[in-house]
Length: 86
Image (cartoon, rainbow, N blue to C red; front, side, top):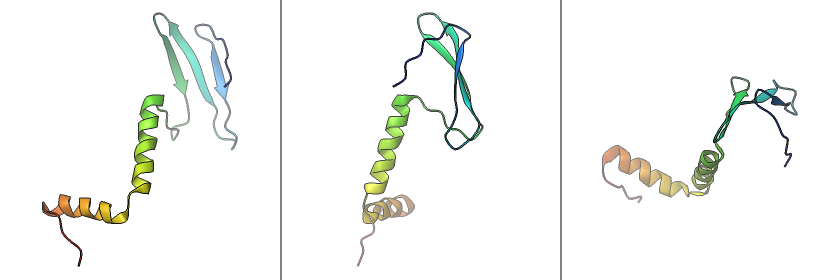
């Protein structure tokens, strides 16, 4: 982890490896908490870490779930009752 000190109104720039648009992170204010401003390309997703972890867990669970379990959920949602396979 890189640790950098920045004062209010100072920023850092992150340059993507693939040569895309750089991302700027600027210190907006420092009071009881630090407020950051982030300038990034339009398609760039920016997450709070705790939310990102939840999304990743959900993605992993969806990939690991057997297809039969997903089919049961879809069938239950569409018809109100669970169907059984023959």
